[in-house]
Image 1 (tube, rainbow over the protein chains, first blue to last red):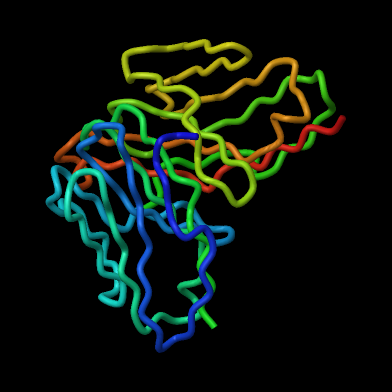
Image 2: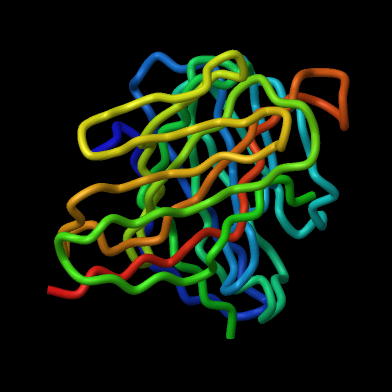
Amino acid sequence: ETGVTQTPRHLVMGMTNKKSLKCEQHLGHNAMYWYKQSAKKPLELMFVYSLEERVENNSVPSRFSPECPNSSHLFLHLHTLQPEDSALYLCASSQDTRYTEAFFGQGTRLTVV
Amino acid sequence: SQQGEEDPQALSIQEGENATMNCSYKTSINNLQWYRQNSGRGLVHLILIRSNEREKHSGRLRVTLDTSKKSSSLLITASRAADTASYFCATDTPQGEGGSEKLVFGKGTKLTVNP
C-alpha cells in the first residue's frame, strides 16, 4: 500500500462513453501525475499537476481531460476514446515536482471496445 | 521522450543467483531511481541515487551510477522467486535542459527468478 489509491481498478468502455478515473493521496504531496503504460512501450507521462496547477501536458489528445480540484485528488476524464487508448493508467504523487520519490497507485486497466 | 534504456529486456535466473540490470540515459540528471512493478500493478520505488553518488545499497539491492558513461546498474543479490517482476530505471532531468523537470522511465527489464 503506497498511500495512492486509484479507482476503478478495471474499466471497460465503449468509444462513445464518457468515464472518469479517480486518484487520491493523503500523503501531503504537492505534485500529482498521470502516466499511461501500454504493452511494450515505456511509461508515458501524460500530465503533471503541482499545487493544483497543471505544469505539464505532454501533447495528450483532448479526449483525455485532467482535473485537480485539490492537492489530494486527481481525475482523468475520458470521452470518445479509441481502442488504441486501452492501457494501464497510473497515477503517482511526489512531495513536489523536483523529484525525490514517486508513489504510484495500483493503476486502472482500461479497455476501450 | 524516452530517456532511460534498460538492458537486458528480459532476464531469467535461478533462485539464489544474482541478477544484474543496466540502464543507460542520454542527458544530464539530478538523480536516477529504480522502480519495481509486479504484473499489471503500480510501480514501487526501490532506491534513488543522486548524480554525485557512485554507489548505494539497500538490503539485497546495490545500485551504481557512472555519470561519465551515463549508465547505472541494479544488482539484486541472492535472488528469490518473489523478486520476479519488471524493473525500471527513471531519470530526473534538471530543469531547463530538455524541457521541464520530469521523471522519465525506460521500457524496463522483465526479471524471472525460477524456484
